[in-house]
Length: 224
Image (tube, one colour):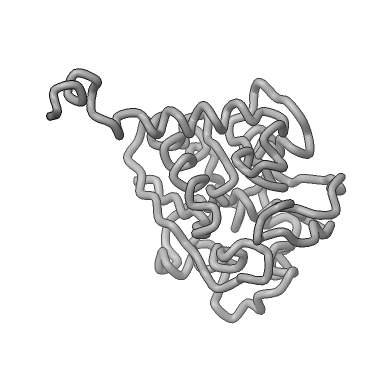
């Protein structure tokens, strides 16, 4: 069973359901999707720090995946990511190395806030977590920006994932090989970001997720 924990924020609920659809539509193995939220309502996501409770929720056993989810779409089989687990590491991430080109994110929404640059930015937005590792995240960790910089780990305890598994469309541009698309500045359904790179994939997954919600045309026509 693949344990997939995802961020959930009521302000991005449409993104969460679209992400979950994109994952389950391509899954070749059983998986459980567990949403996580919190009380971080200062402009950032509600689940900013809840992700670090995943090992505790798994009783410090086995493996789990965390994905932001709300601003992502999966175009590959999550089992392929699951297969990359490596017991040598406490966590495996895409090790982004970039400076954002936009000083503000979530423009035009109630979530609008500064888009701060920091070391390891966006590493924690997609994680393969070894919950049984001796250095698995403990509840004693001080939840600050350093949490997203994995301050409790040494560099050799953080494994690398291929960049396609957390592709920052609005920072890096198009990539036909990308497996998980991530619009880190804002969802394509937000007015300011509808023309962001690879937005057509988000809209395609959203429309696909809505199929079957309306009865067939012949049923509609038969109603009085």
